[in-house]
Length: 459
Image: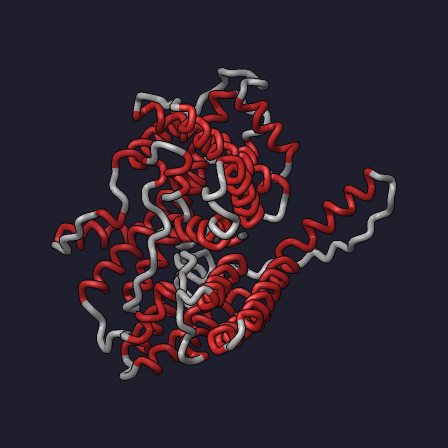
């Protein structure tokens, strides 16, 4: 079930809101949320509800044991068990075929027969998100930064919250646990209004900007064999499409949470207004970046053990950022490409080298970020090579440029560099704002007949 679908907009969510706010106690509200969340997830494929329940049950029990354990050895054993189960489940469903195929190719190169079966496993939607979310809970309890949930109901609801279950933000227990303890009895009109604003703006960004304005005019299949002037406007348009597509989901998730009286962390903060690659990664998919920093980069030593070790840690982190995004070598290459860019930035700062112009810094960052999209969008290295050929004029430079796409790209640059992030807008809740939001909602609903899933659902 998609946020932008008629069943969600006019059946599922209105019914959930009525039932949720009609409950007199906090416990009953959580029961409604839990049932609604498992129904929402089961709507995709009911068989994977058991997988979600298994992951939640393992981490709930492990955290309780870690919290009450008397010896450090017992605490570490339960943490190891929790992490091993989570990574094993994620590894089997998301990475088995990838590593099996890579191993078989290596065997063929060495003259051996394939040794690993290709199982063609169906990837459970959202597994990368809720696995990291659930793991963060046990790790925080182990580090004594969090107290375990007081009941299975609270924890099961936390892991399965439908607004952010499928594609984030990756929410930590420390960010919502206390909110569960003080769920409001009645809806706060201001939070409802703010949540509705977030949801409608996100809906508009998805249906009217990402899907209609950009995706309908961006055809990756046309990039192969295109001239440079045909390729670049379309490819940059795709870069902006990815931003609008993913950030729209995050906006809608935050809005849904606010309408339920729950505040989620922001996941985007105008990333294309950044002046460097490192700054952009602090603004793009913020909750994944925080997760990698707190649970991988800092435990590896961060920047505390010298420049050489820091460079290795950065590359390791971005290797796993790429692997998290997709089970193929192209994604790994994309992650390492981003990591190398961060390393070059660190070394340049160490050497005192910088670009004096603010616009120059932004353009350099954006070019590098966009160039990385060759790995991110291509299905394999052969397609990446074909994209590079088109981008560098291997198929010619001047051939029927798309002036419409050039105009769209320029408009996106203005939006990315000049317009404030949604969180920074000054909502006045006046008649004009209500009229604009109503028009945006009606225009978006008129485009609900064509349902395109969010790109990040595949991760």
